[in-house]
Amino acid sequence: MRIQSRSQWTESVNGYIHSVETLGTVDGPGVRYVIFMQGCPLRCLYCHNPDSFKMGHGRRVGSAELLTDLQGTADFLRRAGGGVTLSGGEPLAQPKFTASLLRGCKEMKLHTALDTTGYLGSKASDAMLADIDLVLLDIKSYTPEIYRRLTGVDLQPTLDFAQRLDRLDRKMWIRFVLVPGLTDDPNNVNGLADFVASLKTVERVEVVPFHNMGKFKWEALGLDYQLGGTEPPTPESIAAVQQVFASRGLETV
Image 1 (tube, rainbow, N blue to C red):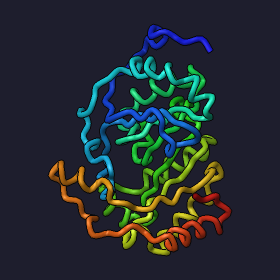
Image 2 (cartoon, rainbow, N blue to C red; image 1 turned 120 degrees about the vertical axis):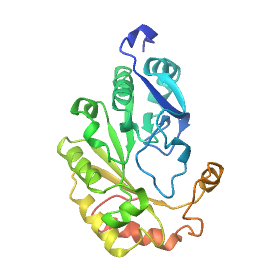
Image 3 (cartoon, rainbow, N blue to C red; image 1 turned 30 degrees about the horizontal axis):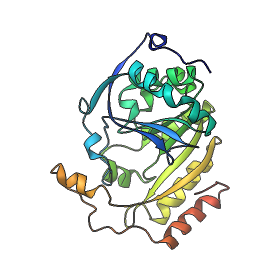
């Protein structure tokens, strides 16, 4: 494929990123070029990138610069069955920047994925969503009280966004972090499984075990890490939750 020049992206939009991972393997299918955006309105208790919370921090960069850098690996990503994932932080906290990156990726015929909480889903235009091949939607809890305790914000915008994606026929992978003593309540798990099963475009559910690998970052930033005494879930408890989703006909990993 012909390599495009920098001038191809005349509508460069400036934004802030936390970091870039060029050979990601856990944020979508195949090998991924992952752009971690800066800024997030949520304050998830187990966030492993608390240094990405604040807007206006991180590296200020234009979308054209990132897309030009991406050209060097675009052919490899296509051959590897991968693509580009915008993660965070929260990409939808910078909707114009995110939309510009997605459009450029589609012009390079790259598979695109958006890793989002969905809380700011109303900021995503239908045109932006049309440039996304896969949404990795993080649903932290189905119980509103637990969701607010975990994130500091309301659950409903995320559920609304999931249903909008379903109406627009956007493919989804649902991510659910299993936190012992918080999100493992059977009513919570069953409620989420029922909701996810009602969405026709969900391809799979990822049950992600809680870990506290981000604890040192919280401490380095002078933040209170409230889950320091929480142990990771056991393999048996993970399998039990996966079975709840599987019983609704959902593929689980």
